[in-house]
Figure (cartoon, one colour):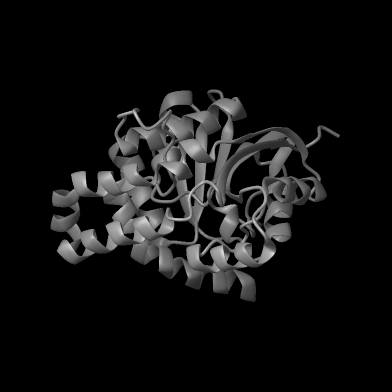
Length: 277
């Protein structure tokens, strides 16, 4: 095991601490939600599934295909894609908690034959052969890759020629100066906070062809009040699982996180493809 991989697996301990809250708070989804506007009263967990469905849709996932969920969280997206498309899905995460939670849910839903969860680093997938997957989804996970170029190269390798990768992630809004960007990246713990154009450059440099990208910050990051409201609505379940202080801490953390607003933080969905030749 390389030093980088060992460090990544130790980093997983941080997710071991936070993901149990996501598992209860957002029904196994560690990513943000997509609302159509302030008057959209869709519950947060369903709005999060809406974002996963958008990813599966732009990937064109079909029954029998092999999908890699790189940085899979507690399993919600992988299970949804398998259930609704008929695909086989492999989730990879540096968190032991997330891998275990996903595996338990797959077993409970009778999906263990089509949905698997691995404790490991999506930047080192040596046990998967070249071209193993028809599609790759990376929902708010590439942001945390210690070596982004290495991670993209590995995802390129395991994706079959002609296969697509769709990422969703926080991006920097236009016009934000470099100094403020660095401050925001540190405050929000977003190591690769950069404009979507910089992400496109990184993806092209790894060999991918860019096909489509959408900037939807107002409908995702811009809905901060809805996340705080969801925490209040789920107070009883959260308090029963983690105590009253955890509920208060979650609400305060989300208020701070979404504070910069869409004038500074955008959100992008990017689809790229590995060339056929």
